[in-house]
Image (cartoon, rainbow, N blue to C red; front, side, top):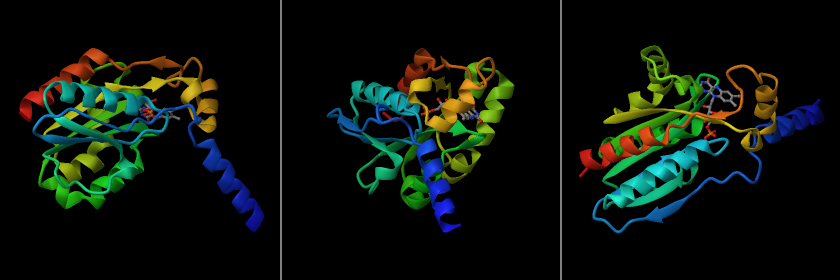
Length: 200
Ligand SMILES: Cc1cc2nc3c(=O)[nH]c(=O)nc-3n(C[C@H](O)[C@H](O)[C@H](O)COP(=O)(O)O)c2cc1C
């Protein structure tokens, strides 16, 4: 009994882990006056790439930016603002991003914040889909009261998915989980540029 519980736990752990080739970027950029934290959760890398793009845009507008995975945040000291990003899986944002928001709640509340969310729901940018995305992000936006919420399409690429999710996607090849990259880089850049202006 104990052995099979451990075996099942191990299988689901490995079934939910992204392949080691998937990159989760963490970097510093810029030399500007105000310091901004861009922090994100991601299972298969797409949100990390969007977070890196937002960090790049902020740096090109004269901010100093730290790009960090949510689980690696130690303190919010010195930041004038923070951007938090997460994908949606099975109708929920990732636990780690809520955890960091809860852990540093009082610090986040004393600085400017913005949230961005990736999901296949945003394959089509309709009022109904935006409303659904805003519902998914509500647990986080209730904590942070962000100044902006960016809603972006996500990506499904088999080579980046944990084995279990890859199996779901392969069995739904004609459906919502079919492979495709629905991130609109123009709209991501515009959102980050608007933030830059708002926080200047
Ligand atoms: C198994 C699975 C479930 C998903 N569930 C949802 C969902 O409920 N709503 C949604 O909008 N997107 C959903 N998505 C899409 C992800 O949000 C999208 O692929 C996102 O880009 C993943 O980001 P990541 O690569 O940073 O982990 C799902 C994707 C997978 C593979």
